[in-house]
Image (cartoon, rainbow, N blue to C red; front, top):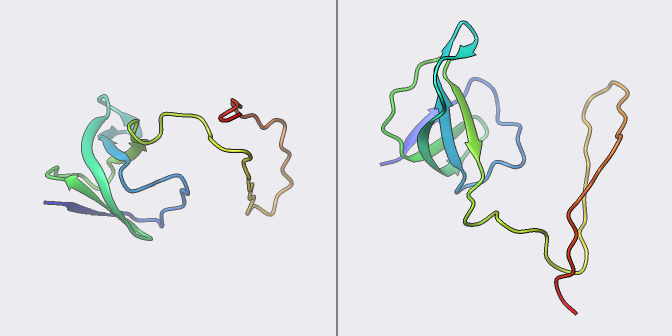
Length: 109
């Protein structure tokens, strides 16, 4: 059965996807007191919540939640003839981009 985890703030992470693995760390005085523990696979993402399966963990209010990409799906480089990148800065402060890189391999000939 999936567990719904409601977050205090809206999710502002474009890389979070269904199928990613969720983990949590218990925070004590602002520091994690253990290694990350698995919550489960993310099955649904809302504006201010995620659902994880199996999700039978009792989380505390200040536990830190993180995620990792599913390696079965996200294990290779970009494929195809071109890639399109969109960079967005929604800050009103001046920002500079010092470098942008990518791994490039010829995928067809």
